[in-house]
Length: 290
Picture (tube, rainbow, N blue to C red):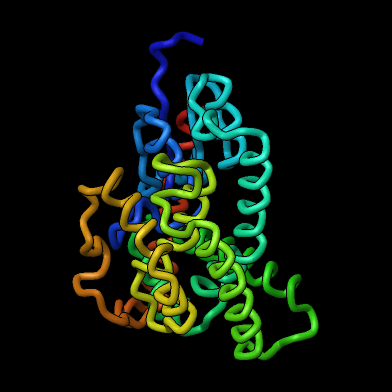
């Protein structure tokens, strides 16, 4: 592959000063920024992007990597490695803590975005409806919500009361955040003055809780109990994302917007969906994809 091939990264859009409104996309964006990869960000906000790409999708020439882990492994083969200065013990610890975050904080994020009824109806659904084109916004919302609900059901198969599930997640979050805060201490980053993969993973899971104005924010408010973790988020923002606007692209005011505020009838939605689907199919047939 030629060295002049450009790196591209397809991801959900940024908003509320978040690199992306999706955790997996945020991890890829922050990692490429920290490791100083010159990458062209392509927001997943058009019919063409939604038709041909998933999220996140790291592209180099004719190669595509559809997960953060695969992207990191590939970049390491090109000598882009955030953990190159870590010794074996630190690498093992970093991997263990990344797994801790993934197992403990990912369910929390999924619950906050998609399972909490108020957040989902008043915020998450509204954002995806406005950020993605028809009919892909409905498809993405359904897929992500089902994935989140399946995760929570797998973790708590005998519990149907969401308030009790929330309490379990609160406890889980407190334990994980406390461990991370203790390990970080007064350091700039987990392993000195430069960010590592662990910093990327921690930032990507904590930043939404710090910056996104969820209507139901009981879990989000927990993060403020550990100022050094909040400072880590601010430090990474200052280093790599100074230019991201704090205001929202899709909410004129940072307020608790209800999903029925658009006043769109079911008939209008159905007609728009059919029209958009016809355009997508026509485009695919014209290009020979079908």
